[in-house]
View 1 (cartoon, rainbow, N blue to C red):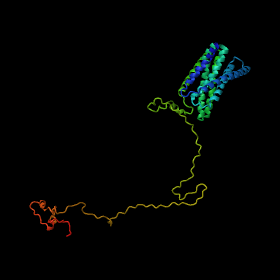
View 2: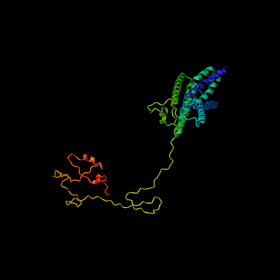
View 3: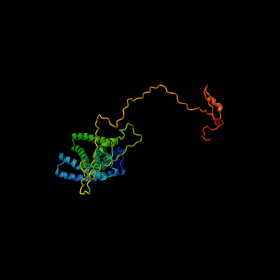
View 4: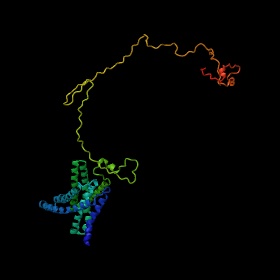
Length: 389
């Protein structure tokens, strides 16, 4: 029963921290199989670390006196911290660098913390069962296990920047961030162990200040990093657009609209040879086209001479032109002096309309006038318009 309690106390801090770090990944959580693989291989690095640290301590005891300041610096920085953090980094690099799931910057933190907590879990089990029991489990649950998680956060932060630099082709920035992914946790881990092994109250106070400061900074950093998580392929200028793609619009996005995921490709160099024109435009004075390159001219082109007519205004003379229009003395109509006109000549007797109805012809003549006599053929009903006999 006691063994189960000790095992639970040894594993519980690592499990809780791993669940917390993974839950912060709200966009695309990493596969459980990959997380389990990193936890397992991270735990196996504990065995290699024990062996290498033991060999390093034996070599250090040979050349440097024990319990001296140089001994503590070399032991904590160059043996313990270097061996443990480099073992974690090797597992992290081999398992995740070419993994297709590694496509967001926060993924690097999840991978590095998983590797570190796998190491911390097995190391905590060994310390709890071999060295102290429940008090050791409680003390390490508050210091060592969160400390390894903090080392993994520093490693994962620079590890993600190195992956982004490789995607965009920045080789120098990639290797600089890979170096920092190893150096930052080694320095923090080494100073953590150094202040604990000095054994003075001043060193213990320095440890508490340093440990709490780094722990707060690390967890604030990952919370901000998880909230601003963007794909590896994003250019830095698109960070604000990825966080809020609707910021440039006055209206709010529709309910349920998801953020678009952009995966731009890196710019490719233009390998096409530049165009070099061989044709030379002739000038206005050039009358023939010279041959281009090694060509032989088969004809000569002579530009035609264009004659241009120049307008010359006519000379002004006093002699009248034969084509001049006559000038009239009056340019407007003047009525004649005659004020009355004679009546028109008579046009002959009027023929009333009616044909054989001559009894109605009297109404066509005004009162006081006499109706003329008509020929007999008209009185008989003949057609007056018919000229035939």
